[in-house]
Image (cartoon, rainbow, N blue to C red; front, side, top):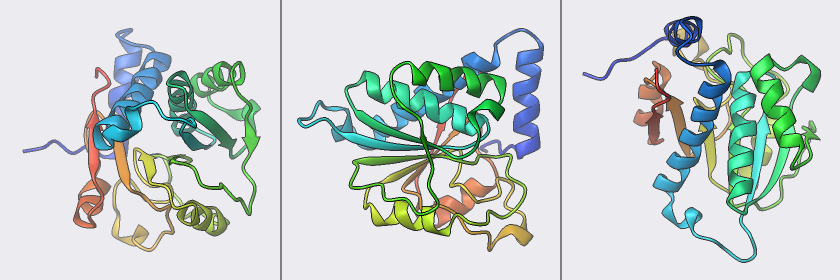
Length: 212
């Protein structure tokens, strides 16, 4: 039987590993980004092959550690020769420490664009949804145009942990929360309750190990 962890249990597992000195939060974030990269190329092998002109990705980062994972994925795709447009929702000065450090690492190789309320993402090959992860505890307001723009660009969208807007614990009262479109969800260590619903809706879920 596959073990399922609630959002609180997942955060506790990460905190215990970091508190024991077995791993740092920064290392976990790097492993998470590597897991997303590997999942993308496993699910879409053609995307791993070099292309001319270079493939393009849009990476949408949020104000928490989910956004930090997005900075790592952006850096790893750039290393593979991709063109990356990275948008940040929120104030970079208020990012958590590990996410802030990965923001700085990305800034050394590419710009960070503010996420507009009415975006046009063009026609990329891939969108990375790193806006909100398992910590979301309220419905998102004001994101309808952003979610519509993701849909309109026509590219597959990879959700880091889960599509932004959904509740990781799949509580019944959150069933009508608006959420981003999703072609593939990549979560870490163990599935969360919401992933059974994603699978039932035909959305593939990949669990990436991060050494916990």
